[in-house]
Length: 255
Ligand code: 4H3
Image (cartoon, rainbow, N blue to C red; front, top):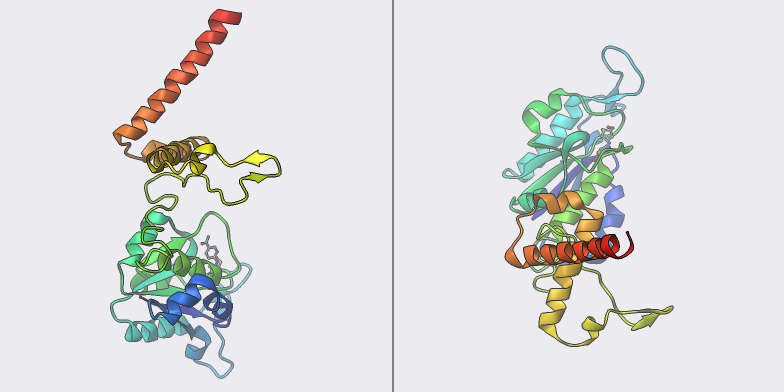
């Protein structure tokens, strides 16, 4: 898979591509990450990429010509790639979208600076406007790296285990179960016994139940939109019965 980031700060991507799983994916030629400097497509001798906003107001706007030149150069390199503009006005990025992006042969990430990019860039040259969430960054570069990172780890063969990405938080619509490693007792807190039992079936059951509990407590919104299977419904019903028992006992026993 190919990624090209368009930016006026291409060096920002160096640190990102030099470490960990992203570095390994590049070394193994599973992904290719390159940058195009938008400034190289500026049309004046001072290589200006921004200008004052029409209508007045504070800040500067990214000029359309250098951006269009950079996007067209990237499309020439990757003709079947999708172009993504990182902007707080975009569709909020999530696991499902990461999977959709994984199916493309290339992504061109347009990283703006200043107050934003000239609106006319979005009309013909951008396939997706994407936001990481409801906050504003000083540039689109970090958001672009987040997209590359999240998509790359979904590519088969990138993560250690054969199914690590399938077992992630979100992939089944639930948060991941709690994780523990050695030592068995850390500052007085024990690892749940079932995990030490070697009972694989019991461990799987425990993991599903804790996954459900964590999602119920931390992200009810995820649980509400998830299609539940029989085992998951059984767990939820069991909690209902347990909770009712507790309520009834209190009600009858103590008033
Ligand atoms: C993306 C980009 C937030 C996000 C961004 C996000 C700078 C876009 C400038 C850059 C514009 C201001 N901020 N939430 N900022 O994903 O070019 O909007």
